[in-house]
Length: 285
Length: 303
Image (cartoon, rainbow over all chains, first blue to last red; front, side, top):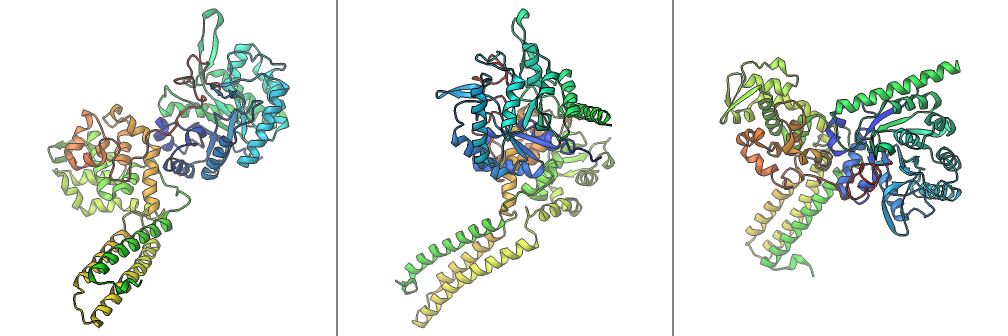
C-alpha cells in the first residue's frame, strides 16, 4: 500500500522565522496569514515568494467573513487572488465565520447563527471565492464562547451542509472542536463521525486556557499554549477515518517556546495520525 | 534639429545628458534581465551563505570572528585576537571556523584575516553555491553583461566619434573635452554593468532581511555566549553592527566601520533592511483581534 503523504507544519510568525528555516527537514509546510500581505509593500510580498521557494506554503485568510449572508467584498477576494498568483500556495483557507455586518467590523471571528440562511450565504460566498481566486478555499470551523443565537441546527450538521454543497474541503480545527465540545457539552468524536471524512483535507492544532468564573468556566482558544492531550486523541480519530492526505498545522501566536518544543508537538501529531492510519488499516484488513 | 550640429559647449551638454540616458538604460536593461520571476532555493538557515551573499568573504570572516569570540573560542585583546587555550579547530564543524581557529592559533591582528588565501579558500563553496543560484553572476550572466556593455559603448562612442569627425572636418581641434567625456561615460557604463550581485541577489538580500526582521526587532534581547544561533544569524543578515547590547560591544570594537553600515534605524548600505513589520501584520490567525491581541477579553482566537 502506498504511504499517504501527510504534511506537518507550523504557522509562520516572524519570531519563529529562524527556527522554521533551520528545521525545514522536520517541517513540511508553512501556513502564512494572507491578510498580513494584502496591502504589504512589494518587497514583503516578494519575500513571501522567496519563502514559498524554500518550502510549501499555504495561505490562511482571517478577514473575508465567508459564513455570512453578506457577500464577501470583491476587493478582498481580489487581494487574495493576487496573493495566490504571486505566491502559488499549495492551498488557501478561510474561516466559517462572520467578521463584519452593516459596515461594522467586529474584530473577531464570530460564529454565525447556524441556519439555512447562513448555509446558503456561505455557499454563495465560497462559489464567488472560487471563481475569483480560481481555487476553492478550505473552510475552517471556528471556536465560540456563546452558542450562536438564532441557530436551528448543531455545528456538525451546519458544517457538513456547507462542505457537501460547496466545492470547499474542510480545514478541521481540532482545538476549536475541543473547546466547543467542552463548553457546550457535546461529543467531539461523534462530531468527527458525522462530518464527511473524505472532505477533511487539513487540520489545525492549537492550545488554549480556561477562562471565566470557577462555576462557569470556558475553554478559550488562544493559540498561546501547548496542544492539550485531548486534541491529539481527536487527531488520531481523524487519522482513523480519513484516507486522503492531511495537512496538519500547529498554530502558535505568542508565548513562544523553543522551536524544538514546537517540533516535538509536530512529532506527536505525526504519531497521532500514524496511529489513526494504522487503526484504519487494521479495521479494513 | 540634428544634435550633431550643436556647437561645442552645447554638444557637451547634450552628450552628458545622452550618456546619462544610455547608462540609465543599461542599468534598467541589466536589472530586468537579471531579476528572475522565481526565487532560487538556497539554505536560508546558513548564516555564512547569507553573509557571503551580503558582503562577500570579508563579511563571512567578520561574522565568523564575532561568533567564535561570542562562543569563547577566540579571545580578543584590543585589535588582536587569538585562539582560546581550550579551543581546537576540531571542536567546530564549519570549514571557515576551522580555518580561522588555525589562522589565529598564535594570535594576530584582526585585519590579517582579510589577506589570507586559506581563509578565502574556505569561502569558495559559498561563492559556488550563490553563482549556481545566479545570485552572484555566473559565466552566462557575465557574458550577457559584456554584450550589453559592448552595445552601450558602441552607442556612446558612435555618437561621440561622429561629432569628433565632424569637428575635425570643420577644421576644429577642440575635441579634448568630448573625448574626456566619452571616456568618463565608458568608465561609468563599465562600473554599472558589473556589480558584485545580480539583481536577483540584491532582491534575495532584501527578502532574507524581511523574513528575518523579527530578529532585528529583538536584537537587544538576544543572549550572548553562543547558546543559540540567533546572534550569528542577526550578524549574517544585517551585519555585525546590528548586534546590540553590551554583550556584543566587542563586535563594534573589532569592526568599527560596520556599526555605521548596519546600525541605527533602517539605513543599510547592504541592500536595505527590509521592513520590520508589515502593513497590517497581525502575525496571528486570530482575526483582526479586539483592540490588542487575541486570547483576551474578546473570546480568544476562534480561528
